[in-house]
Image: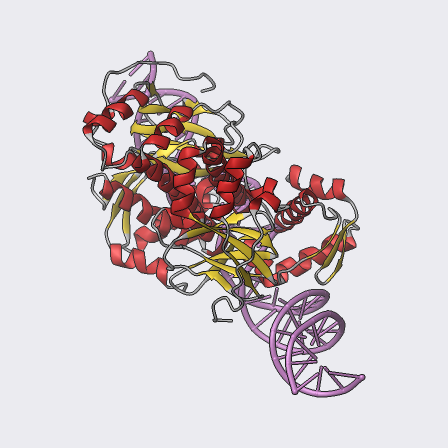
Length: 242
Length: 242
DNA sequence: GCTGAGCATTGATATATGTCAAAATACGCC
DNA sequence: GGCGTATTTTGACATATATCAATGCTCAGC
């Protein structure tokens, strides 16, 4: 659990052939530019559940594009309290918190067997000076993270427990759908405890909210297997503050 | 209240002579580079309390450096709930949420008479392709915003009411001190309601927490005039989760 | 197929914060 | 400088969520 990444492998796959390309890289690059970007992402690493991708305090070198699997990020308080700040899945890019001070300010931990592309940030900066569309893409990714965080602030600051869980489920569903998976049937990779930490709730409250949604016919819950039965009503839960 | 900026003035002051330069611009520019940056920030605008700098939904053109005064940013929920996401002061840069979609995703409202420099974002991108230190600075500013947001998520997700208020006061104090103002005596520009929205609390809870801090001898409160009397104990409130 | 160690669920109760209401105070405007 | 409105404070009470505790489920490992 406290060990760093165990199986380090340097794979030969490239962005140009990566099926996630449209998720993490700009789409309008010429093939010559694409080849240059390939040189950026040659370093790939594998992680198993519980491995740290980076820890708070680690020096910053790279952003990481998640190629497969998923991670959680968490910030730690001095007194030991921790808060999950996000669950990241395939195609998402993490590590941007560290640009500010050249030191990571949160932990990133694999939720399952996962693989990432390390994107050395100084190379990313150099290259984005020459490729405006890469530059623009990088800015958009960082901005998207800011917008995402604002959404979570809204959730934590002004929603009740069941609204928070509904928002969480809908967000998850939508991101899975964007990756070609079912929007209505999925497996959660995280515990009630982790969901609670992310949503600012205790695990029992999360569990009760799941049970209540099930009783109301909104979803079917079998521990970590979720099926959304009534998407419109789940969405309505968010829009009306009843 | 619903009117846009009223007094639009084009001032002739430049970054090179701006006393906030070290807050919003990189420090290691040559005088030639500095002249180029001057061309970027010629447009300045004045706002009075209640003016919108931008609104959610507005098209994105510029980031804004706050030259004097202060602003609040807030996000709106479909059902009308709103949440203050930050109070920005002199030297801080806002509007980065809009880069992602070219549309602003929150409102920015002047808290007092204020002046901003508009930084047209396409020019900022062009110029940062040629000036690595400007590029790096821009990235750091965006990353800093991400880190700030994570801190608020921690606050909203895992702190109790009085811890939140202590964190708010200490953050305010520190930012004022960084600008050469007193760290222990200051005027709040925002209502209890706005503080509550920012901290995920009701205004009555904020008011009670203020009163309680005063009874405990931590601070002296006279409505919006605050004096911090016992900084160490206020800080201790945050570190121990008692 | 059994066993044990986490997880998850559920119930009873406690508590922090929200809600509603009234009084006090501050502040802008004429 | 006084009036009216908005803001703040304070109190009594309501309630959502936390806490504590017990039971049940699941799944990995033998």
